[in-house]
Image 1 (cartoon, rainbow, N blue to C red):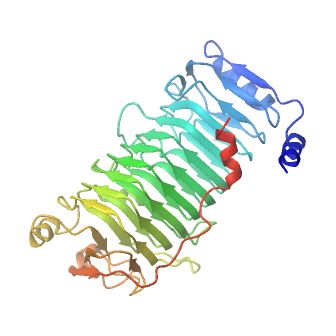
Image 2 (image 1 turned 120 degrees about the vertical axis):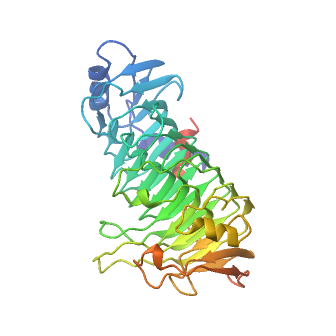
Image 3 (image 1 turned 90 degrees about the vertical axis):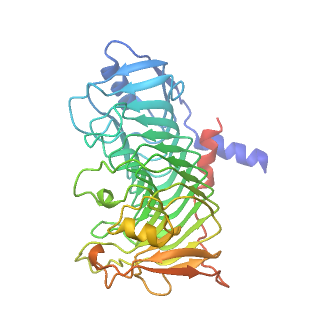
Length: 397
């Protein structure tokens, strides 16, 4: 069996895969883009250590290419002098591996992959070095419209929307990554079969967001697991441009689930998120998409470690609510929409329901009421989550 597997792998591999080396220095923009154009399936474009000073975005549209640097602190693609407003790197081909390099100071998104199936981001750093600014690019690591996404060991800071964002995709793993000083640390949007595992989300406006939004080509987000993450001290003021959906995320949000079905939140450490450790909400705005369900359904709040938090709620009447609860809100905040099946508890947990009268109602119409959930006898299960196992092999070599 081992011989047969090795034979199949050899037959599948390109016969003349090669390594194309690109060093920083003069004409780096032209030389690197040329390498990405001339690469063939199976090739490795190898970036040397140093700083590549780039003035325009890069693109890759060849299947099965690896773009590899000497390490996320050693190889830096520096877009400080970028003249356009687009992303730093755009990938539109399948089976691509991006690993061991950094992208800094893009005018638009850091790295975007669109329609790129079975893509791997491994030990990639995206940073806006000037700190939290509305003028920073929206997304750091940004795969969209993909089947098969593995994001492992990455770091993102300074994104004015989401540091690590996966949208309109399925079969997703985001793990062992650091998201800090973004508006949203990690966001899974309009996607299914995702697992967000073992990450550190800290000093963002909101730590981990799981959203489903209307009027997009792919909707029906859900079947997602958020587990074993550290979601701590998310207290950066919201710096998203006005009008963005994440501009409404309150400073101090730990995990927020909006309008999804079967999302399991378990095994996380949620500490010192000053508005709420966990929020479960319906979509708050008016919409005209008849395909869309704006309510949360079967959101499972399992056993999580809850430390502090709720002490500076960024909510209408937050100070009065805090005082009523003895100085801090309970760990679970719910808008009260979605009915009795909106939230299912895996452990006893105290909450605050805003008791909004209807979807789209103003927060000023809230009628806050404390509640407590007790463990359900049967919990919904999110199964079949995560990136295809075959993607693991690409980061083992």
